[in-house]
Amino acid sequence: MLAPSFPGTKWILPHARIIPVTINMQMKMSAWFDLSSLSDMDNEDEKGLLSSAHAINEIITAEVDAGMPANKIILGGFSQGCALGLLTGLTTERKLAGLICLSGWLPIRKLVKSSMSDHARNMPVFWGHGTADQVVRYSWGEMSAKFLQDSKFKDVTFKSYDMGHGSDPEELRDLKAWLENLLNKTSS
Picture (cartoon, rainbow, N blue to C red):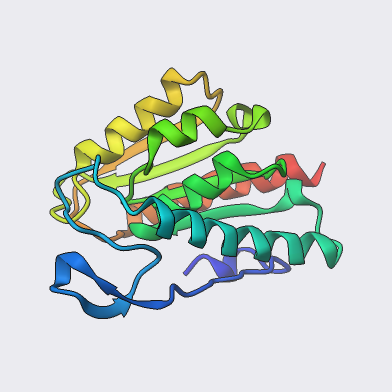
């Protein structure tokens, strides 16, 4: 949906590995990390999160080694992908162009707060979340975006949408406009 609007942009869409997920009775499924609850932000799979963040950092390193400047890389994700993108983007040593967060939350906030990179606060963030989200509570997204604002992030765009755990045309239009603005800034 967005790719045709940005010709010449390289899109890398990694997939999570297949792992047993506690909340789904240990059934194996595609997930970046284990989830034991959708209501407890304090019982998070730190080991799985950090392992997946390392894998995303390896993709970033490969792109930089291939000639892509880190400050032209935007990380984004939906749900667990949002959580992982935030964790990676806020703690990576590289100065990235921005973060896209859709229907997700910031995991392991205490660790992020203590290991946040100095340049992270200057990174633009687009955050979209449905007010009727029954999977990742709207309050989680709102609280996570507030954490960024309270941490003195200079450019956090948080938008609410009348939807559940998904995306809709209004969110995509807003994201497209945000991306156009960001890409115009990074190309100059």
